[in-house]
Length: 590
Image 1 (cartoon, one colour):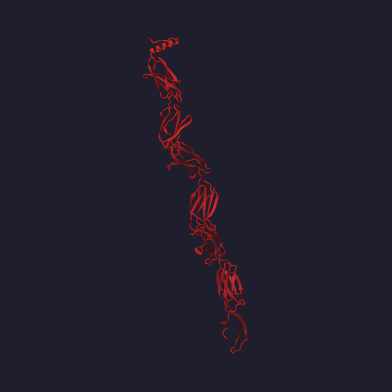
Image 2 (cartoon, rainbow, N blue to C red):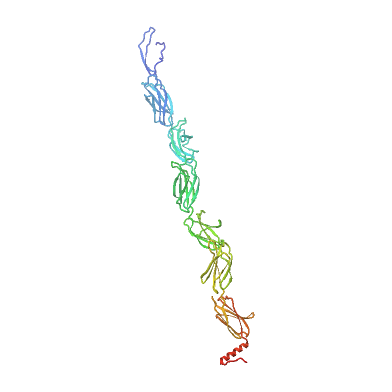
């Protein structure tokens, strides 16, 4: 073209192409000067549709479309805070800037470049590298309803942290915190939770999540109770707690030493083979399938002590019963003993001895005695039971009511207490002669020997045959009176008696001579004859002869009478005697 000006613009050229320009000076007549030649490239078009194709914590990848026109390559630079960090040329339509700082905003300039180094205008974009995820995340604390997390601050820029808590794939809680720790609360006991924690920039960009999981602790068993205790076992039961439970860890210890430990899937357990009378501590924890346990619930119990052994009734009276038993080995404080009758407790007490006497009991009753070993805390063993009847009271006011030569009659008062009958015996010289039982308050023993001392034992007897102590008395049967008493000689002033010795014991004889109602003479003799002298002639005398025992008991009197001769009869007797002695016979007067 021709122009009158000294400048000209060529338009509608192709970008990035080298053009050659020829310039002539031209006269009006059309004559041209020599040609002046110059060349120039049109500027290339900048890259199109530049995009951030990928971002990591240390890299940013860019891509773009090839622009129209000539392109030899692309000039790229990465800057941060107006300072160029990286710069290079690539022949590709993409590039990744690496070794960047996490969480930082970078500005990227991309220019199309010609072979001669001409650059297009820059296309600018920016991007943040992703922040680093939290480091060394850990579970710092777990309770039944909370989980606490903590982590280290990662390298690079971090605005805050984004956290989430999920269970069974469902998000339960979400939170944002500026701190490097967080506690998720109000969780369900015994459940497994998954926790995601990401570093977050101020513009909301998140790092990759760091994932950790934890189970909340299960709730300990509830309402633990001691359901049964024996001398060698303790049974526990408890309620199932809220939340997940796989089983229960149950342990038994004594004096700080674990004795037994077991895992149970039921809500009860019995520890057996324990030592009697010992205090045991029981620890019970809920357990998850992964072995995580709840806090322990603790309770304690004493096994029952061994009951006393070889309990026996050592002595019984009418109002007391004495018991004794073997000492029980172990931590025994004492023994609880009780006495009951007809289902009603009469006495109850605690003793430190291995024997006891219950007194002031009622005679003739059956009593039941319970003896238990007692620990310091008051726990009692099972009762050992024995029973015994108090002896009945012996008969009271026993007396000999009548005595003959061959019988003795006894009578007595009914004693206090139970009485079924009376056992009575008659003995002589240590040998029992008669024995019987009677339901009356009297008895006559017959067929006895005259003049003999008998010993009588009378015992109250219960229905079961138990006897009271014997009430004892003794009595002599009366002796038989002398037999065949006769007057063997009579004078005017004396009368001689003789008699046969009666059957039975005889010590001596009591003889008396009376006239009218007046006793004239009285004496005792060991002989079977006696002469009463100094009597009055011609008087009738009455003679009583009784057998007498050593204790003074007398038989009935054998009685006879005789008259002393008169004075005349005495004179005639004397003359007759004299004549007989001289050999002369006397004749009656005519």
